[in-house]
Length: 109
Length: 112
Image (cartoon, rainbow over the protein chains, first blue to last red):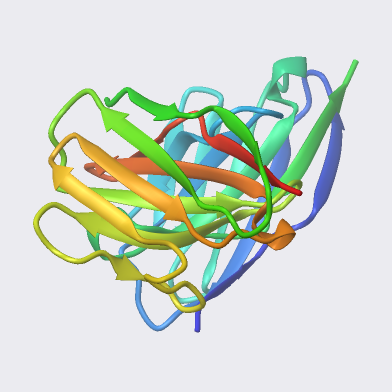
């Protein structure tokens, strides 16, 4: 089977940097994605790593190491609006996603 | 990008009944996906719907319980059959474009 592990909760203050780790077990995948979901909202795409290394998109960066079955999402210059749930997900054939359990990020002032 | 709408946005149903959820996309796509998200939980893939062929179901989900239609490249329906309170959840459809998935707003289902 496939599984992903990520911390259930992370707290931080405005302006700080936070890293959300994701470890996974799978027999095969195309890449690792990250999605953000605010309460009551739909998940929205943040980042995707098909290859090992770092991908940077504005304040958000994502990293993948296939040899370590590990990835992370790095959020910089945190803002209150970043308070949300963050999911790592394995990209399968046809872009179907297998999601981790999610990390709730709480940003305080 | 893709814009996805779902109907209904929410419903309260009696056990033993069925509900059909509609998903409309603003562009033609090959695959559409249906997910379930129970309150405070992660998303679980129910099935992948291709136009013109049977849907592919994930482990733990069966066609008799969650029949899916995909009559064209912009539309799909998911039916939740013979509902029980355990089916209370948010049901989301999505489409994949390149490496990104776009999600509909979800249908919040409560079964009494």
